[in-house]
Image 1 (cartoon, helix red, strand yellow):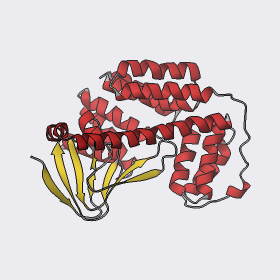
Image 2: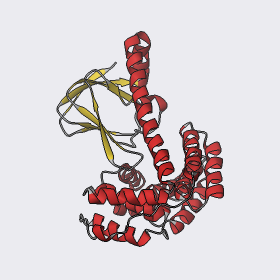
Image 3: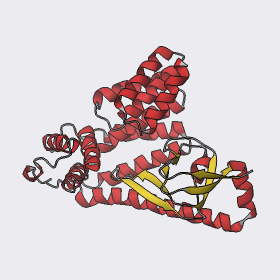
Image 4: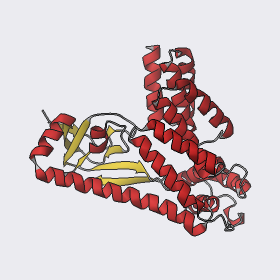
Length: 323
């Protein structure tokens, strides 16, 4: 039976990356869904209104939570299992309409972010300069966390790029919480790379869509095609990480380990480095090599922030092995 659950202010209903088949409806109080913007990595906040439900997509789809649900003030919510929620939804047209409205808003938000990603590349005709400018902008605005994110991605995707030395200098300043020598940094000069980014991006997001639908083999082929036809660009690094995930979900653990080993050698500062290490550790564990798995989980705990899902997953996996 659905039951009322009380949460204190500043508590967490669930973390991004958690798996659960619980659906919630907010009865009273305030709850925020926090997630990272796919354009900039900046943390975004969506407030849940009284009477609205959340956690539906991941619960029904049986995939990890896409956001962290933070309780802002003392709150009460009704917790449903998936069968309970489905039974009530089928008997109540109003709930179905609310669900469609929520999904529609989320799809519009994602569509807008993807469109902005594509358009920004088309307008500048130079994704390298665009990414560097994002890092400059956030550093100038003293948003150091976002600046670090953007500049690290620049150095990952363009380690020998035309702004690599400036990006390294700015990154050091951002990590130290300072604007440093920002005023002395040169302005990006547009190039004439055409509109290739748009086509590559479309291929990338199509592959991501295939992966989300659990069509792992088809997604793998698409990601491999992106690297073959557009090697060296921003989307190569992204596709490299996704290929490893495909191998893992296809239970091709040996290939997953080999692939991520090569990827890390090529992109030692890859923004998804820690997540790649987790898949390597998990692959070793799945193959029965617990000693290797423990080594990777401990390495992750020494590298990742404690608030990240990969830290919690590694800690849980390590505890399970060591007892």
